Image 1: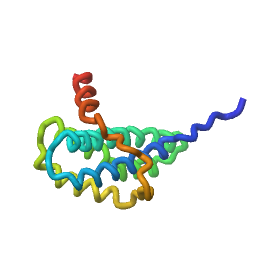
Image 2 (image 1 turned 120 degrees about the vertical axis):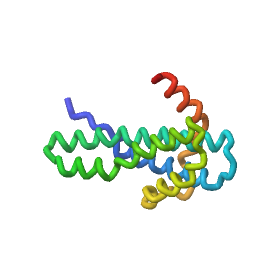
Image 3 (image 1 turned 90 degrees about the vertical axis):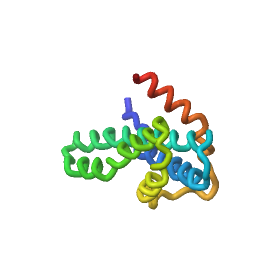
Image 4 (image 1 turned 135 degrees about the vertical axis):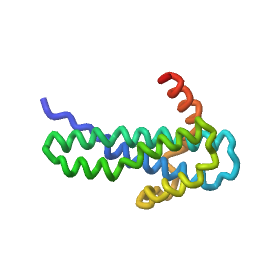
Length: 142
C-alpha cells in the first residue's frame, strides 16, 4: 500500500486562514460603528488566529522529528504573535473593550503586509455568525 499524502496540509490551511484574516481586517477597517457585523468580524479574527496558532505546533513537530530544532524554534518565534493577538481580540469582543481595537488592528496589519489576496473574493464571508460561535465555545470551556 502506498503512502497517504494529505494535499491540504497545515501550511495551506494557514495560508487560507491568513487570506481570510486579511479580508476580514479590510472589511473591519471600513466600519465606523460597533454593530453585529463588527462583532462578527472581530470574533472571526480571534477564531481564525487561534486556528493559525494551532497549526504552528503541527508544523514544528514535523521538523523536530527530523532534528531541525533551530528551524522549529525560529518558526515558533515568527508566528507567536498569532496566539497573543487572538487572546487580545477575544478580550475586546467578550469584555467589550472596543476602545483598544484600533491599536490592535494596526498591530495586526503589520503582520499581514505580505499576504496577497486574489483579485476577486473567493473566500466569501466566513465571519458571519462568528460572534455567536466564539461565545458558545467560551461558555462550553467554562
